[in-house]
Image (tube, rainbow, N blue to C red; front, top):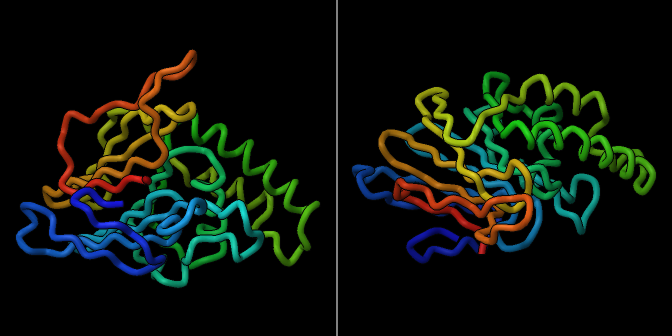
Length: 224
């Protein structure tokens, strides 16, 4: 759902937003997964010639290509930046396929927090082993070598650490939920977009509750 009342209810169809202070320029939100379902979270934001991909998961109810986000709806070569909120498979397990089996921009940069990167590798390696025993070889999306190749490209960042990639400013907030989970704020030409991913405002014995960002976003993308 988008703040302001817009609800994403159709997969891979752009939702056009006119952000405050955007001078009338259109910001597009394209749900490639999780637009009207739970699973394969993947959302592309396009604004003023910049493209940011948030999350890249698989759908737990399907296997093989049917579990992936709808990559055919976009040109992956245009993506400037990919931000992964946390290590659950429905938010990250499509990343090796995107990087190694599509025309994903070789100059694009991929970021996640340090804990997410460490646990990502362990979970995806297990995902490959389980998939190889439960599905036919034709349905295996990638192998262990593909995961290792993605590890070489993934960069880590800390909460509140500001980064800039190709004119896109971004930083992360603690999202609660699981160790290393992040909400990402991006800023393009003065317009701020907050993508929450999964978050929790309930503090427990080992995790703090999700932060409330001190900056008001112009566009809020949140699961509901």
